[in-house]
Length: 220
Length: 402
Ligand SMILES: Nc1ncnc2c1ncn2[C@@H]1O[C@H](COP(=O)(O)OP(=O)(O)O)[C@@H](O)[C@H]1O
Ligand SMILES: [Mg+2]
Image (cartoon, each protein chain N blue to C red):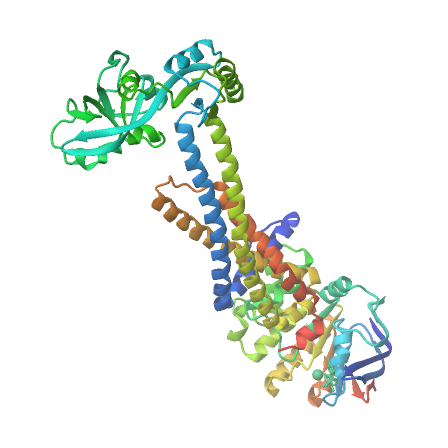
């Protein structure tokens, strides 16, 4: 499903190259619920943006769905993000101008699907995350937990091969965090969605089927 | 809520465009102040283009209308200003010309001179026109009262008074019937038989007192023709007629007359107004540059402010061209709204100019299409760089930016 070999990433700070990822190796099977933990600044988000095809590694190899992705063109990467990856971010990243349903349907716009179909699928997805009655609300009319549910619905609407969640509960209180975690677990168990959750919340991490720790630029 | 149109698979592109347009309108509405500022700039610029081009077209039409009203088939034949070798042209020559010509249907001689008038206790210097009865029809004069001079008036002291002459205090202050009154011209008593209405294009009829040509000849001892007004037969090319007349006077009298065809004037007016309209359009496009730079500025700010949004869209699968199209749509819509507002401003400005100059107001289609076409072009041109910049943003940098 996902395979990473000897992946390095350095950032240029001033005149120096600052290594962040120093030889990442990772295999994720279909249907896994993987947690990646590690101290702040250890490079978890950096790894996620590379896995999510938003950023490129300095060197290394990466296969997603049996496809070597690092040699793809920008358009191909965009299409893969659209079809194969669903993102969930710490601060939701919803578009404030759009309603919940429109936010959820957003990825399908780049898919040549009719507006009616997009709308129908958005509503179905919202129902799945328990927000059917909030379809026409805008993000600022929703609570943090509700916004994150909308974001999860948006991540899932394109039936992605993998969902990447970067500190999805980081901005939520513990009660709401658990609700979101329950949603991830049920999606993973009932629908078989492959999910990688980045978190430094141990209570979240230990509910996952596998936990990896980022330390000194490598995953353990 | 999303409107639930079903476009079917082949119209998905249209649906996509509609989505872009709706998004664009929404985000323009969100940034009201910025949008308004850009709109002011672009609408004034487009307004300038539309009004100046329209004014050019309307002015041209006005000139053309005057020239055509005088009759496109009319020729003016002027003797040379100072003839040394040749002979003068007389009334007889006019009739000989008409008889021998294969292109002319009518030729009316006219002697223009000036004399002293006395009426209602006042003396003044006045222009005199001596001509025949046909002068009225060929110059499309209209009578205010009485009649024009006729062929039966030969050598009679009958006069017709031009519209501007009637504005003289001597006539303005005169109470009673002007027809039948006596005006003294060079101390000869002349009877008023008619007065003229304002004629927009014949200068002579407007500012002169008109008498039979024979009367002028002996009263002023002037037998040289000042001008011949001729009308061509139907379907005659003015160039052929001009050649024929020039040759006639060269052979018979060894003089070089100047022939001016109204049709030629019409062609010249068309050329001049086309040039003028082009020039006005060109000058006003400079203001478009300013408006366009305003659009670019607003769009660049918009791109900077919406980096996060761009990052999100890129993360969920927007390609560079999708982002570019979205921002381009926004710029074009901004310009089109500006264009429509500008059309309003332009039409209003044009209307005001027309009513001040007493021109016939109409909305030239060219001006309108030009304005709207140009505004979308401005949107595409000045929106392209910001849209390109938005598309080229690095997804992760855009997403992380605040
Ligand atoms: N664009 C960048 N340029 C330079 N340094 C960066 C950049 N992005 C991240 N970093 C640095 O890389 C390190 C890892 O960041 P990050 O992956 O966000 O860590 P985490 O998500 O584990 O907290 C941090 O020290 C951060 O300052
Ligand atoms: Mg992080």
